[in-house]
Length: 108
Ligand code: SF4
Ligand code: SF4
Image 1 (cartoon, rainbow, N blue to C red):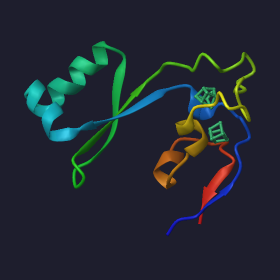
Image 2 (image 1 turned 90 degrees about the horizontal axis):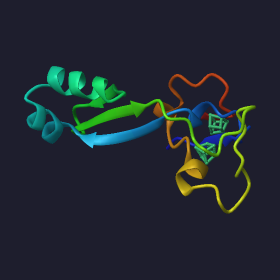
Image 3 (image 1 turned 90 degrees about the vertical axis):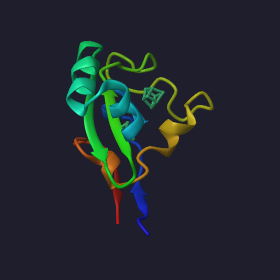
Image 4 (image 1 turned 120 degrees about the vertical axis):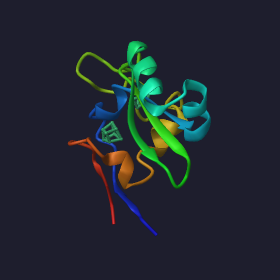
């Protein structure tokens, strides 16, 4: 089992986008094809950044910075009860770290 080590340095890297997981087959069925789904989402500012065919999942990302991010890219609610649970839990696995250069967490 992977163990998370390190700590949040409040670098703000994971706070620039909203990431959503969708059910792959239903989403593709609604749009007719993956190409059509990607086209539609691209017009709405949503990018399909990955998929897990085995688990029937699609991963979406939207460039929407968090309102709690300060101008110097620090979380204004870091170490406060106002910090959302999902932010405290992030990253949950190695996949979450993909594309993040400065995250203070590692998995071993
Ligand atoms: S609440 Fe803080 S840690 Fe969570 S996304 Fe916003 S700035 Fe980032
Ligand atoms: S990328 Fe890592 S270190 Fe940076 S704010 Fe997110 S959890 Fe914290």
